[in-house]
Image 1 (cartoon, rainbow, N blue to C red):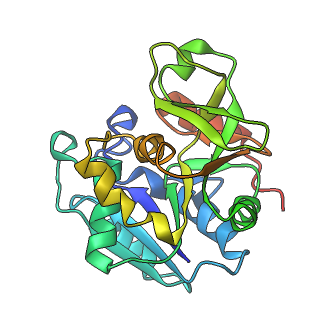
Image 2 (image 1 turned 90 degrees about the vertical axis):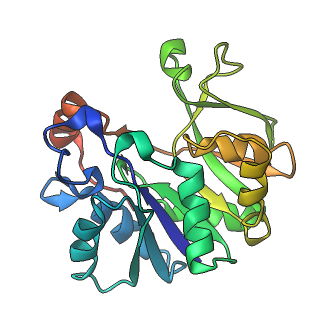
Length: 245
């Protein structure tokens, strides 16, 4: 299995910290955000390569970071240099698939979120379901729901509906940017883009895919920390205690 790490954003809300430095490499408790994620995933023994999808502006930072790791880490430069010319998460995923000719199972994750639980649980869940999978957590705030992916499931976690940034949310189940694509669904990313699915938010592909084939949504067993601005970064620095295995 390959792990695709979405890291091509420009994190403008974190300026000046990220004006010339990528958000996924910011430190939390003296450890880069990406290192928290990779060190945890590595415990599963399922991932044989980590693929960081970067923009051109920050690719050299990721290459320098990758050089100091025992894991196989490949950095893919999507060629963009400004927030205005970014490809969007779904097009970045397809760019990596095309560039590296990826055909197997993919774990696709945002490189700027932290979790207090192990993603190995999610990998095990996906292997058990034998479908593409996402995670979900209960979000009481309708205001926040309108800014994220919202999912409706049946009693067996099968997705009945998913919508990115809905004007009228149909549930309180919010989807963080962590996905498992089974190998048979990887070629469908290109089809989804060609069919007009959204490309900016990574969940837009899942919104399209769940209408074509079975996709399951695991209830998240812990908390997610989204580092969006200076205030949330400071809060994570104070609150984050690491991952419970």
